Image (cartoon, rainbow, N blue to C red; front, side, top):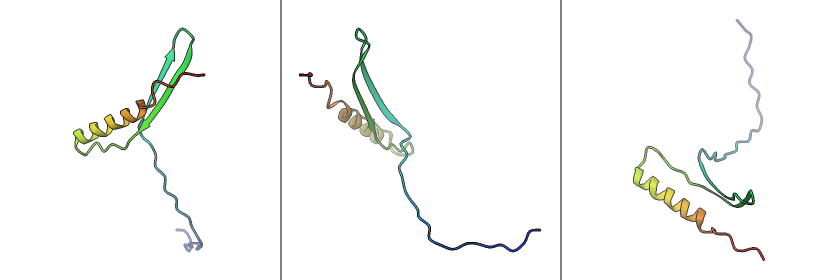
Length: 76
């Protein structure tokens, strides 16, 4: 079945990218004003096959970094 196989030559390009499978997002709302007050996100690579204590430490560090800018400065 079929005929002769032919493969083309030429230049190709490969790219690499990181896909975040987990992002922690925190939104603080003012319910009286129905307004977003602050939004923060943090991403950190965790390896479930590694030591759970190290993963917890990485998560704690990401949360501390996320919340370092909260509360936002008052608007002038």
